[in-house]
Image 1 (tube, rainbow, N blue to C red):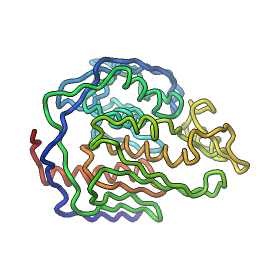
Image 2 (image 1 turned 60 degrees about the horizontal axis):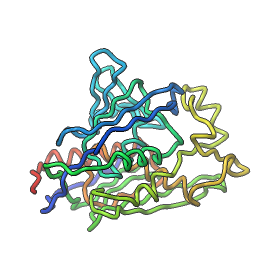
Image 3 (image 1 turned 180 degrees about the horizontal axis):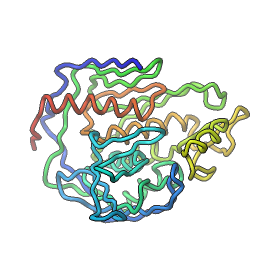
Image 4 (image 1 turned 120 degrees about the vertical axis):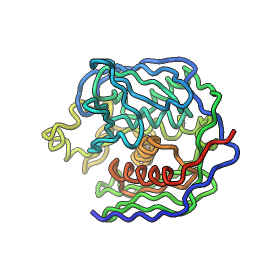
Length: 305
């Protein structure tokens, strides 16, 4: 693996940081996990200023907390897993993307199993639940910062990058030999800076479903993965085309990868930057997040109201 990281003087404080936000109420969703195939229930509640997004394993003794932070990332094989000691929670990226995309900084996420439910394979149900619960401003400002120099991480022809930019933007490209997918891209920028209030995420990104390749299904299941996968919670593509159309967007796979990127980058304070990815993975996403987090720690800033 080749990894290239370039960074220097990468942080400045923005003068008018928006307020932190939490949920206006609570909500509950349940379903099977994509990889474990086990049924779990998630209850998401408001949380105090500065507490961040935290998973609580209510099924385990003493209900251990797992912070949704980059330093808690465990394995990243076809999903992102967080860990605190022996407690883990897997496939968190869709829920975290929904919380970040809808502007929720602080949330208590109670879960009674080791994997978040996949629901329909997208973040659509999560964003609908957040919208129904409402999002409310809190008293403290967010930590906001801008990237000043580019960061690149590459593995072969796949890469992720963060580039200095005047506004927050995400661009994602994928390339598959299967004609129904092929080479496709999507670029998206929130309507409001730092996801303060953003209906465009719910409309343009959240509905995009996870996807898989028909010829890989048996292999993945033989290796203990996608036990809960079905045509109800994932798009499946074969050499002949999509097994379960119609698509919600012509480039739904690229949009879903962008959704995953937002979820993985939500494990830190996302800076104002243009994030670009091509043929990337949860592993590359989280490597970029670690590099950004290390940069922020080296040059700490204090929020200003």
